[in-house]
Amino acid sequence: MASIELQQIAHQYPSTSGEMPSYALNPLQQCWQDGGAYALLGPSGCGKTTLLNIISGLLQPSEGRVLFDNTNVTALGPEQRNIAQVFQFPVVYDTLSVADNLAFPLRNRGLGKAEIAARVKTVLDMLGLSARANVKARNLNADDKQKISLGRGLVRTDVNAILFDEPLTVIDPHLKWQLRTELKKIHQQFGHTMIYVTHDQTEALTFADKVIVMLAGSIVQIGTPQELFEHPAHTFVGRFIGSPGMNILPCEVQGTQILVGGSPVATTALTCAGLPGLELGVRPEFVTFSETGGVAATVTGIEDTGRHRIVRALVNDTKICGILREGESLPAAPRVLLDPARIKLYQHSHLLAGQVP
Ligand code: ADP
Ligand code: MG
Image (cartoon, rainbow, N blue to C red; front, side):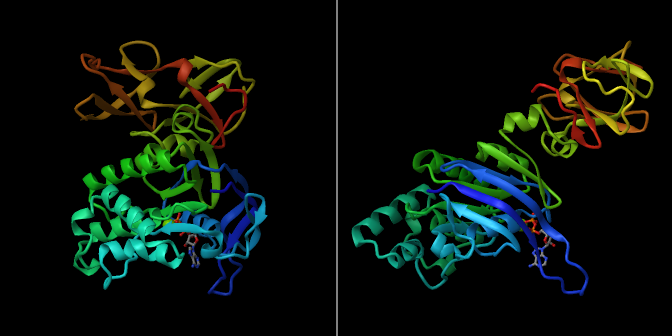
């Protein structure tokens, strides 16, 4: 187990076209605690794999240093850093049995027979593979092969960290939920530092204590799932987290009054009157519909999720979502009301300072 420090890390892949290469990862400075469960969350191409491979040692950063427990490991590979990594697609030895695939990393490290047998059994049970322990890996389906890959990542107890790069992508949805729960349990039981890469907010929010949200090669926010939901530091985080995501509406502030399309919607204690590029963020859970007050809206669709209905509407030309709970109905000419206590103000996509979570 180790704390992981990234000092002024940045990465540019070599350019193939002769142009100046752009940064896949912009300069960043981070320290992650020993034993934490972290998720790297962001859309495809935002630099998650690049960052993970720099941490594991598969990739040398073009700038900066990586420290494990204050020791510089920048020049070391994954083996020397003592990192286990699980990839998106199965990495298994087809000709070995399931149990031998799991025993392999342990034999490599010279563990005793009894200890290997015990560890392998634990992992086989954990992943529901015990009945097929002696089957050759090539006879397994893709889901089960990926389980072996996960098992190979989890079988060693002496690792500094276990890194997962979208490990459940190829797995059936039901099994996904089960394995995610299992991983969470393993983290609680063994307390390994775990870093889990995903583009799926549900995976990130259910697995991690701390979620690192990335966009275009930069970290835009690090927080607990609750912090990301209640206090997005960037409009991207607001939109990306939640289902549906946060509503973001252009607004202006006159004195203390927040106006959307000229209609007053709330007041603010921030001194931001007249600032350009202001936007207001409010989650659909805090948008209600009324005959009076608020701002006029044109309803464009209603979606029944079973638990509640999601109302989609346009305010001026901006899309907005609200929630209709059991027993609530939509007025004939609805206006949207925004809960003033739940409104966040952003300028050029960044949360204005001085707003309490
Ligand atoms: P993610 O894992 O979030 O999808 P990546 O870290 O794989 O993102 O990629 C970040 C950026 O770096 C992307 O623009 C991608 O095209 C580029 N990239 C990734 N790997 C390479 C590579 N080996 N050579 C050149 N560019 C790369
Ligand atoms: Mg990736």
